[in-house]
Image (cartoon, rainbow, N blue to C red; front, side):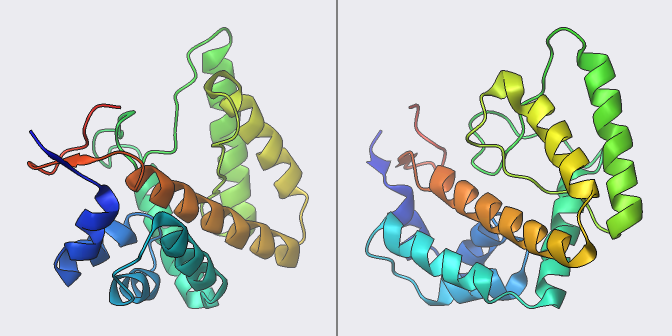
Length: 185
């Protein structure tokens, strides 16, 4: 079975398919359309640079749209959790000692965050080892709960940017087989 680099697949996909793939990286329709319209990208670095620039250009309404998409992604019962091979999954469930208490604390802190800032909490934890992500998330929640509204707006924009770039990196990391599935790494 021959493999195709995912950037080539993104570059050659029909516009609606490319837009849908990109929207899963950042839930802003304008962001996804902008990136889909500027294809083909010569390399992953060019795609990431365009994505980063598009993130900086998001209006407050588009940030709210992206946050609503993140809320849908995080909602319990929204469907099966993405797996390790899903380029859009940025979660890794913690199951070590004290997991139940840590998850309960995380849910309580997320509820307090959402009550205070009126939107879902987003954080990119790619650089954190999986067994430390829940603790890092709790630390980020507690820190950001102390932010002013303006500081949190900036922090949220930054985390959305980091998540979008992270998802694009995963999307373009592994070759895609002729059937459209990610080839084994």
